[in-house]
Length: 123
Image (cartoon, rainbow, N blue to C red; front, side, top):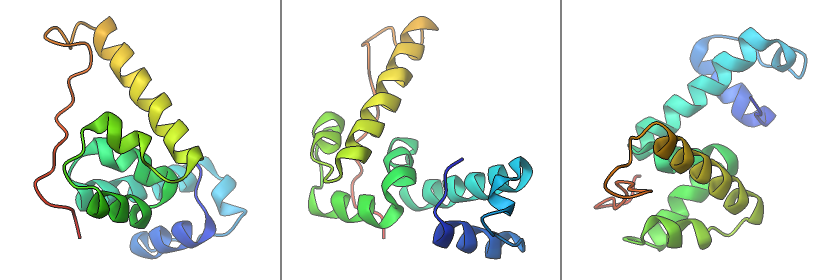
């Protein structure tokens, strides 16, 4: 999992681990730190659909985008993310999600039905 050092260090502190560039190359440590970060994002945003771009851009950036653009449909939310890398990442992940839902017959009523319309932005 890809983590920048400040995020890795923050997650390591929560888990009582040590994060260094070397330990990030250790799969067991890397996956624990990355999983912890995803758990933090899920707890913050309450919606996996927001944790995905949050993992890429950082929770602060997505939280700010959500606060500045409340009530946008998912497609508009993604298309208005400021960082092109995050926008492309979110598109790719959501496209794959929709395709797998279709393949496994989990999206019968609509090809991509995602419950996305948070009432209030996360803090």
